[in-house]
Image (cartoon, rainbow, N blue to C red; front, side, top):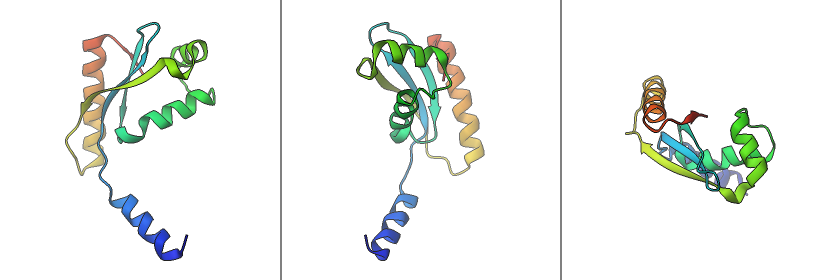
Length: 111
């Protein structure tokens, strides 16, 4: 890749719009779900699956279910998208608040 092409690709990546939101991880065989929040919903599945494949996920019950049932048994469910927010502190506070709302509403374990 030429230097100019690389610079253009980096600039395009930095300018892309991200959508923050709340998601749930579903284990199809058991129906068990875990709830989480992400500053970028488009990248959360890849990030979670990587930590689970590496056996590095800090959530023991999720890791145990993954080990028992395998990756094909899991899916990500998008529960809520947040409106675009420029202030990262406000966005993070809102993500925590909405995660707690969904966790209480659906009686789910937090990721």
